[in-house]
Length: 164
Image (cartoon, rainbow, N blue to C red):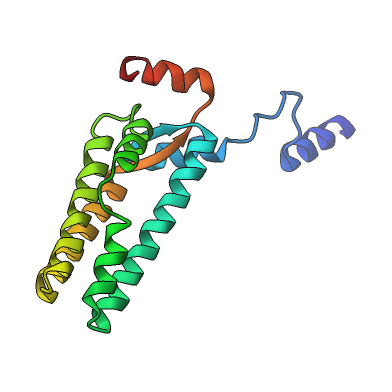
């Protein structure tokens, strides 16, 4: 009877002689739930990319504020920081080396940002607003399609070997 009671108590409390299963990896679980294409990045690259994205949002906020004040010169100045440059092209190419299609989408967004600055310099408020909307559509489309995936040096090298 004592043994039967002990067995019942163990069953009720979840006692077992089998080792407990390791807890699930929350990062792996999130990756399984997120259908977007991973952009493999080393930790320092991911942190840099996130900082760049926050900077892009600051530019969008400044352009929006300038449009609200009808200050197209300020809109052009802000948008020019988001536009295409040799350094931006190199950075997007490097960041997207492990994710087919990412670099092209990133560069497309920067080219669209050039249109914001161009329209603002021309004094065309409506075209500036349309170019901002087009650029933001590119941003949201890319964020809907891609997600960061943090990888180690060995994985990064294997995924980007053909890109270098």
